[in-house]
Length: 297
Ligand code: NCD
Image 1 (cartoon, rainbow, N blue to C red):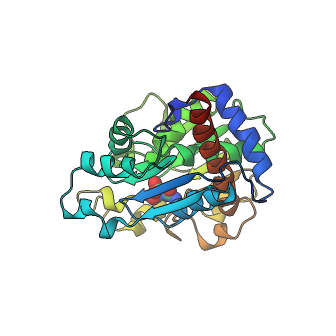
Image 2 (cartoon, helix red, strand yellow):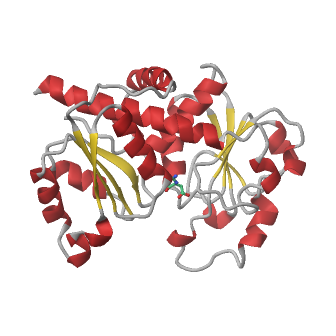
Image 3 (spheres, protein in one colour):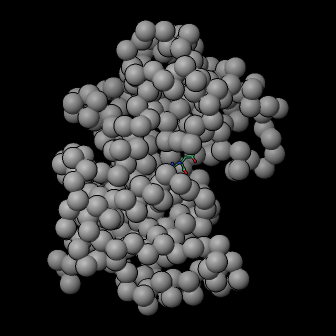
């Protein structure tokens, strides 16, 4: 049985197939592939867009969705993860979508469950469907011609599971990655590193992926104020000028810290396209994992 814990769980061919299938799903028409199936979502960490994206994806495929309300669940009363896994399993879902503030939780659950587990974000570790939807958005924009395209990932890279998953996936698809961040947000890496977002860098890039400062994962306030950070790293029109490129952000955006109000309205900013693409790619992932399991039974 297959799970999606990190982007490495799918090979390149499988990913290209997922992108192809997701492209079909962009018509937003309801499908019946997962009729009679049940998908459980359990989000131990807050989320609006990823949770609703997975739930729309499941429903658009004809599946039923059971959302476990973690605030009311027994884990907040001290139940161990293993007991939670056993209870979830006993309900017999066809897939479980899980988000947790601790890295590794989806992979532990996967060892104890009899259905595919999809990681919807675990700590600083991984967020595979976000990276897949980002790749999908880039692939669609450049009509498949993505090898060698230059991408700058900007922001709190060290604390970002979105950055981790994208670095793995986009390197595999041979994008040329540069990391742009202040020293304390820069991970140890063999990739190209830049400590300033300047015009020369912008001139040489095809894609900017801006990330949110992950204040909830900082032990102390590292930048005296987010304003200081914004002075150096906020994506602004007067920096990009008329340069032909695309701007991505996984959301939620800290306006005028990550991206300026003006750039939020700019047609190079593809955030809403990413949201739409996210539902389609999650449909493709859920369909693949659930139907493949059925074939093997
Ligand atoms: C990201 C996340 O939760 O990891 N957001 C998301 O999935 N929509 C990025 C973030 O929180 O900054």
